[in-house]
Length: 172
Image (cartoon, rainbow, N blue to C red):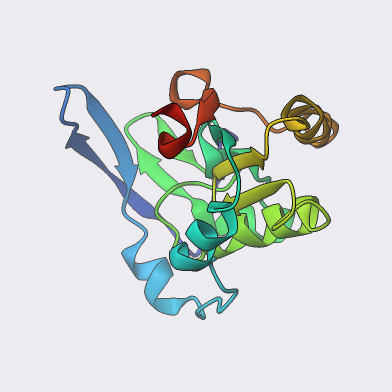
């Protein structure tokens, strides 16, 4: 993170205890969020996603690794992400968590990158992706998805991915 000086927006950091006892450092962007316009880019409706996968029999569930942090901040917006620590004032090069428009920005990026695959081979909800098939073309669908992820240098969190899951009714 670059050190920043003389900025209009500066947020404080707030340590937050996670369920596992570890501490996550969060940045308090409440003031910035109040001053930021709402981004009305639509998120997918969960019921539509469920309907879109219902006719398929084989699934792979994937999660983007630190999803928002894979989106680079525009140069002119980096200065708005400034936060203060005892070691100095810093700003983010990538989109931090805590910004009110982060979800919409990430969804817009995913729709832009995967528009030709969505509602056909895959479904995307922010940083969650589902590759779906009726069985025979699942590997081909995954390869297309992985090629696209690689092209745009997006990473998955392998600890939160499940590959080749079958529809429950087909397992009986």
